[in-house]
Length: 112
Length: 110
Image (tube, rainbow over all chains, first blue to last red; front, side, top):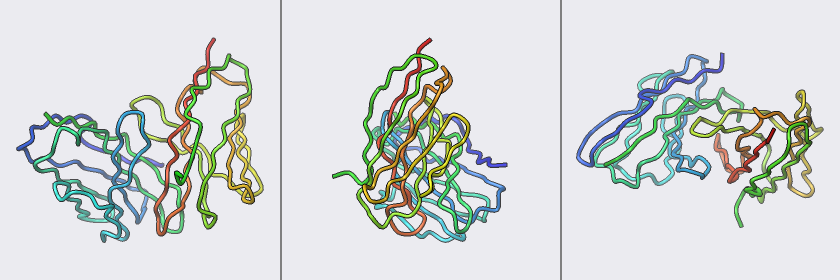
């Protein structure tokens, strides 16, 4: 089973709102990732968690705040976003020792 | 120079055709290589890993040329359902990080 789930599927939020994206995997993977993907572009890495600790932050603005409550869950807290933050937000996971990453279906975010 | 480069296409081919995509990467220290497939408005899905000896999965064949730093994907007997964007992916950076090429769009026509 190579399933990563994400909620919500779609999210519309205003620039003053606070919202959270959620990601879950039950494959025992110990690395989890957040990516941002704009139309007709490849995914861009935002954050990497390894063993529930933030290991990489790709200079992402502080209005995006990741959280890893446990080895199966990954959240992305959003606050004071800009319209240009509208994109598909993808979560992925990989098992220890492997570079193969498995993606969730994504959350399509629109900031108004 | 981009770390991973692909021809964006689109490649328009008839059903049953054979089509090949190439991808070049700049970091000679890269160790792992993949092809992902992404349908419109969907997530990328791992199509296959690419091994030094080359590997085949049904109609799909992937090859790696380390000396020239390029990766190829060959699709035989194209199906309408093969229409998608194919992403070349390389671990060109430290840790678990992957670098994605810009993708090659394939459109298979009846």
